[in-house]
Image 1 (cartoon, rainbow, N blue to C red):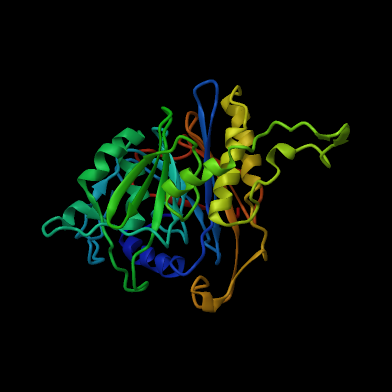
Image 2 (cartoon, helix red, strand yellow):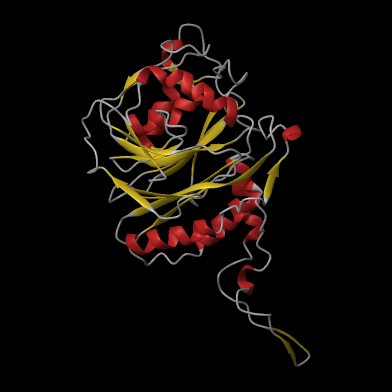
Length: 358
């Protein structure tokens, strides 16, 4: 299905009108192979069906920048340097998750309580983009997180209003490159904050710095089983194996998911090939699959978009940064679909979307 560029701004606004009202419990991670490869993975949770497709965008794809007032063409327009593959919503030509041909991968994760973007100075409208364009801009223009780190301070991500939404979309961005770099990009109180992600895990609010401070509270946990308790010659063994992680938080709160994902990643043996780590990533992400019905969004809460809704894991992604494969499975189609940069014309003229149900 061809995606027409002229529909981009209206479609983005329509998506944000729904997205702003929904809970979004994303979990992301990265695993390193002992052969120099890296595996990135994440889940996407939402309160309404996103009808996501796998979007394949060629080199030279022109995107129209949205200005601070929400008008298309007033912002920083660009032509992509790199082809990209990723997940969109409602068949629209922008990414909420993806990777490019250079091995840069990442996603947007909801941060409704903390994200506030930049006030654009007079005369700088054409050097700004709207929040929903950030990942698409990065994947189209940069190969490494260092390039992103150098570029973003020289431009603005605005608090562009959307008529259909009545406010600004709020998210943070996690990025990993094939060379081993990982950063989290946040806009907090109007400031750009970029932080090295030494753990490789990211979830939603609170800010990343809070998560990094909180993980220290769980330093006593690990994959190694503890010896039985002995008191005056009596031995009190655990009920089963697995007591090394006893006390690990298990709820779907973003703070608990961060700790759980971090412990799984940090305890995954590093002496494994990229192929092995790819399989392990799927199994780790299985732990963050939210069953339908376990999170109910009441309309009055403000998270249901004016309607009662269930939040669930709509899709899960695992991307191989070295071999250039992007694999995805959905709630409706648990079979894994895999895409690569050999499956479409990297110098084509149009972006194409492939439904997850085929």
